[in-house]
Length: 424
Image 1 (cartoon, rainbow, N blue to C red):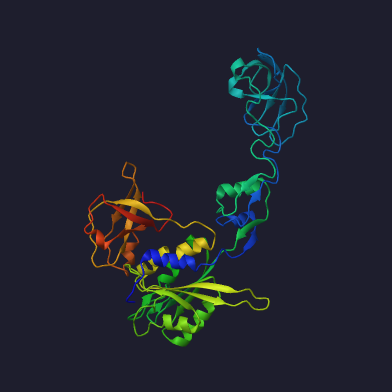
Image 2 (image 1 turned 120 degrees about the vertical axis):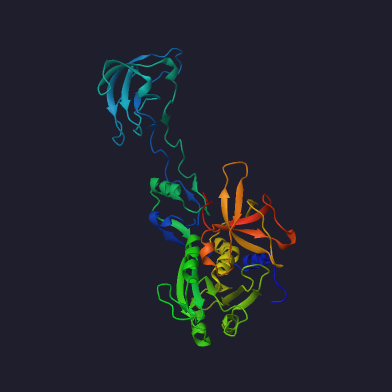
């Protein structure tokens, strides 16, 4: 690993080798949340489907050319939401109407309840009302049929990640079959004789496997489908078998075994499985030994070609986390036709110093300040790439460049979130 790539060059190589979004599938409305639309969806109907009252009040018929409209009206009926409207209205009459109710034919004004005076009767049974002239205008408090969207007009665009508001729109229009980009399948394989399952009690010299559940959570955060493969021991036969299993996915993540230890078999076993190495080693801290390659199969009868992106992530958990965010997440976003989550600028809250000659992606607490400071980064005390405990207090990372020299509080740095939210 004498000639190490820069982080930006490594990301570029990942994206250059990433295939386009692979296929689509049809989902129900309930299944569509969080997924990416594979096609434009037009509105199948007008919205609203009928002329609709926007207020609780009184529906009346105004003459179009009268300068001084009538101010008193006899109440002749009631229309409620969901009941339809067969009521006939004549000039000088008013019909009590509820929010969301269909406006009767001939009605061209709805006066809100709070703007009228009841002359005869009471609020439960008004018989005549008086309306001030300033609230009388054509189409007041009425949404006409198709006033929000016309049938055939664009409703949701291809590439949109379905949010709760989109689910509501799909439900309103009764779109039962939602075309979505297929979720990338991400196989996760931890390696090492020292590992035991997270639920197990370690023996002497053993540690629990924290990488697999962490990576599974990160994959889910990318709205992808994790496939945990468990732990492969440090022997070539077992590792080779698990690698073959993982290569059937869209992405294979291996952790551990990519450095220069006597049992670091991952690079050679990937080569034996016909995975083409793209790069091995990036100038960064933590995560320097990261390995990336491509596995491809030729098309066969009734079998399309298959491409799997393969990552050998370092075994230390913070290194795996950082490498996932920098190199895996952008690929998973591209596989779903989504824009990359970009870095942003933050101001350091205190002095910082970089030791060594590699850029450091330092765990940090990123806060959206309530004053003019904008986004701030609080560098946390950190024990290195195996220090999960301290790292758990961070919600992102700040990039510290060695060539910058000592950093002062208030200096601007590049930062990235690990979570969806800034710190309070």
